[in-house]
Length: 551
Image 1 (tube, rainbow, N blue to C red):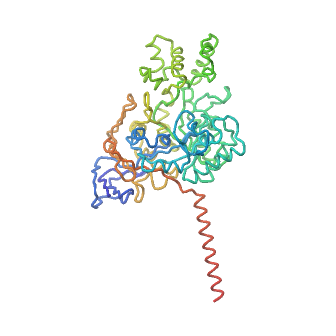
Image 2: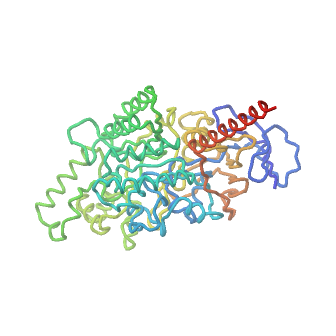
Image 3: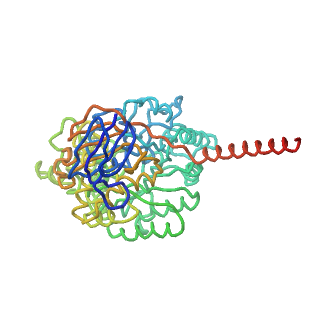
């Protein structure tokens, strides 16, 4: 089937200025990009006054755990997203030995998948059942869980080799790289030497390693209290890993949690640029919100939940808890006003969307006592949106920085309040493009071509002849996001094509599952082919010489 998009303002995914052009789609490919295409297409869309862009690429997603659930994926499609890079923060829904006795631990309690297995099985099981395309990374945490569960101890040589074999199996199956989650179990327990071995396999296959660092704030667990800001120490560790292994790194969600960390922005950016001046390949991704998803226990010391209910009521323990929480809030630069409840329990929907301070006022309690009560009700598992991840000045600075690309880092919640990133992230980037007076071609480049280049996704991310027909058509002047309603679909996205088929029309999902798991042909495999080709050519030449000699 041929589809013709007429008279749209084409942003080709590069930083080039747009042109009014037509785009001809033939089955799953872009056949022609030109002015006044005269072709008898099966369907013609008048795109006058609209922007034609490559389909948006979400640089950081966890939707491998929700891949075949269209309810969970459609909100991302409605943002104009056609491709998501998954398997981040050390978590992937694949990279597991099917005989592992720890399979049910994959996701470390944050995510859940019924039958995690190999990447090859994941590809086969999702065939013809994906709304959007998926670019797979394999999680270090997942491979470690497969061989050792959530064990805190260093792996034996045998277990380490088993883990690396699982990684290599995924790379051969087409993974684009891997990921570390150094703030989560079990990644936080892995010694540096293990992280280096994991990174060396990624490097061997010319892949990319995304890293959730150990700290995103001025203070964090695992570092001495008196030191330079912990988020700077965390970046130092990542840079050391690159120096040791030469691996290409994408620093996941560069954020600055708590007001006290905001003064670190310029120092952090300087570290990135100094590393690049040394020849190290590092960049980062961001989202457009001033808050992010977290758990109710984010400022709770770990020892508290280990106490019995009786011990929690003891005056000394309550005094100690209050003292530590107050110190933590002060050092981080956050307060109970910054903790917005997403979900506590099915019995308490009335708390959702309100801050701890607001709930405390309604129930005539001290905010600290209200916070402890919410922890108790949710058994420490409640979800919140934590404010002060950024401020608007920081978001503007990072959007304008050459090293940033864009992502959602969000997923659909089956209970409670949704994360705005699930519904609104990429349209909000477009809104802020206007607000910060950024050239639209630069924003689209970060959402498409620059991301495809960063992850080496071939034949996508650009409006070019012969490229995959992942295309988003939108009305830039009508892009509108209502952040007060996190699950409200933004306005302005008109059409979304996934591999040449219309998946979204004027905010209506077209019941099309035309996404695929995109796989990568790795450099090491290509080198083997080149070697074989050279060897065969040498043998052929030798035979010709021998024949000539005999003649």
